[in-house]
Image (cartoon, rainbow, N blue to C red; front, side, top):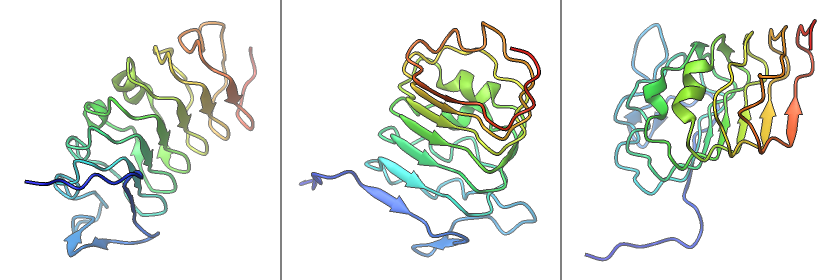
Length: 178
């Protein structure tokens, strides 16, 4: 059996407000907009997934479980609420870029914990409601964009587990103490 290996990364781009892709429903028919749990299950070679500008409110635990080569995941400008369960990123060992900006997230500590020890290099959580950046070991992280949140207290230990951090954006928060 011959398998074609593309010399360029394989991208899947879903247009804004798209709810159908290749005759597979992107979202369940429910009051809450969720990814269909098996939508990406056969895309083993997928490296970049852009789901920006949809109306996703939650993500099933196993939505990305078969995407072990995934390096770029864009979930910005959706309606993700409160927090993302840690199991969502359990197999994201190659994830380098994660964009969670412009959602309704309040707590990202469990998300960060699930990504510790991985290869995450760039994380955007801007334009959410995050009030605490719990220190989690992300040794490869060099860019953290956390502007326009509810951060108020930054301590010396906040970024202690990010030894590679080069770009840090904390603008437009409620920081009163450093």
